[in-house]
Image (cartoon, one colour):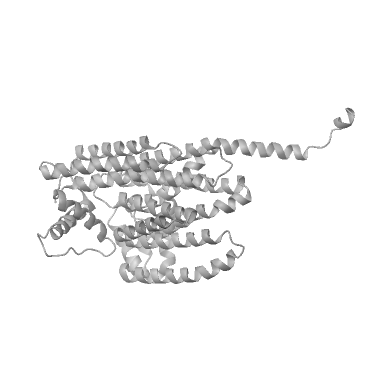
Length: 448
């Protein structure tokens, strides 16, 4: 099927819809960016829009065609728009847990007609809003590093905003008719909302977090369910950490959470098929349809259970692709290699930021802010675990792992921004220890 990216822009209805959505969306991005108080991130939001727009120009110049999954979503959205406008009584039927995106784009098409640029503009705006949510999350997390100077904290927020705007792992998927930009945006909103709930106890943030999780579950069922459970566990840890009875509280609160996990697993198994046999079958299919399939996936049969599947997938999801797997230079593997390098670098920096908190923050402050960092950690692990079950080629991993990247970007930015300050603090502490252990020289007695 040959569908131009610019289809429908020659009509007044299509062009006017794209222009109005772009103008209104730009105004919303600029207004929301003011929620970050410590620094002005409007320039970073502008950069995100410009870089995404430049990528779109390259896509149009290199072929001006929708490809692969984009064609599927475009066709499904056309059917949904006909249903929504009363032109058809046939409701669109698609894989459960993925329906949300087709109805979102279908609603846009009901206004503009079948114009792929409407979906691309939406994704571009959501990508710019992700810059805001990542920067705001960083602003909150820096408050748990009381020994860092204010300028260092502001630098971390600026870096986080620039990373979210300029990292190819994020912006390269925005100018496409795909679910990646909405997914990363909703994940960043859910995490930010949860952090705000546990800090302020305000209901509006709970509504924000729950709405983001529900929206994510609508367009990516397993990911939304996994993130929701992870954030619930993180919230329990935060709410109980100040109490002297926190161990007992966590024990009794985790009982219903374990029940929630069991219910979520059963529901996900019913809807998406999570038995070892079904997972192994999907993994083999995903590996075989792409030249970037994980080696060893064919041996991960259902009869061998989850253990073998996870032995193949988990290392690659956490740190792949590995050098020995780059056996042929192909666009997919080059893309995966680029995304993998960015991911591993961000992961190492995030772990350094966690180490810095444990090493250079006093115990009272560490206890105060630790659970906030724990929320990021638990959410990241939940998403990686979900990917380890559902991903079996690097092309797909390069599209999905950025969902976890937006969670650890605040920590990565803090690690870079704090590097000189932490080095100075380490030298200061080393000097203090030397003075404390220096033997007496007798000079005090000489002057008396």
